[in-house]
Image (cartoon, rainbow, N blue to C red):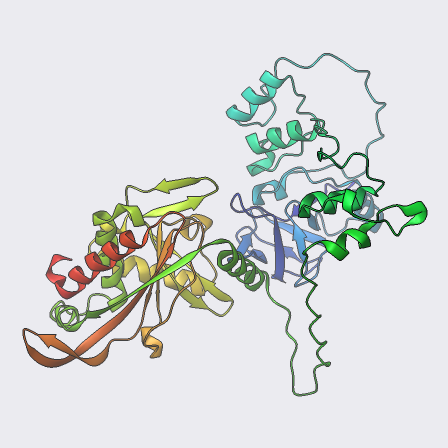
Length: 465
């Protein structure tokens, strides 16, 4: 019987729940060598190459290009080229997701489904989990404290390891919901009304005692309550667009573009944006960059300036989470990079501790990896502040959407020649237009104003950088 192995959808990062097969790099039935790229997997942020850990062969491809599957789903079957179709069919039928990391793809699995064992009789909750079970220390402590059996928990950690999240999920699933019963509405008990009519009346402050029911036997129904409740009528549906013609190409959104659309919509709907704008002279900064031999781009100098300004105004160096504000000791600056697949924001960590030259090298490296779709999750997840610079495209000014959970983002336009007051004289100098978008739940207007003043001082006196 052939030794078959699963090749499953890997998991990169705690937020990844599914992936899209961007393209197979090996053919079905043809052997490959260790180190060969087997498949390209596209997530909502990056496209990763999955390399072979050992020599092998994909005897059957189960998922086609551009198909999206959840983490742990079986994508292909690995085994000897002479494996029979019956053996492969039995293996696919018996497969159950057990691990979601790339390394778990190489673990051996039975070639045929085992005979189902009879259900064991109920036993006392286990007090000790065997050392042979792959489980994190935190998950082990939680499971042992709750007397929870881990035998039926589907692991989501690396190499099939059970995580604390897996244990919490299993414990939550076993809890019974607490039923609160009907809504108590004083004075409405005697009214002869349907449950839906009662609920709508309670939500809109309608006194059922004052209504005459039009339902069977005088029962108050939904329509009776809606007739007196102050509920706005639903808006008319948008007209249905006509089918695209021959000159229109319909292109489905990629996983990354769908995520960008979802996150931007959530950001604009959930975050109360406040916008602060300021003009800043850039002639001294441009001159300093020329004297330095142009060791970095203007954006590299702005990243350094923003990092130092966040030191002076730490109230803007935050992330906003549900009911909590996370304040950072260092400035982790995310820079917006446009790629063929959409916008992504790799992060310059501890930018306040790096020189302009170091920032220039790191930003160039991250931008190259971003455009190649090879960023690791830790290179673009998190960050405490963002910068979006469209100056190279000739955009003079714009307002940027906050990248949650970060608390603020700085939008930078092109440096254009404008008149300024220079000690009573009018001079024409390059001027940058800065726009700061702040999450008003955590950052007050005065804090944003102080940050703009601090970064303006650094840009106009760039020797401090």
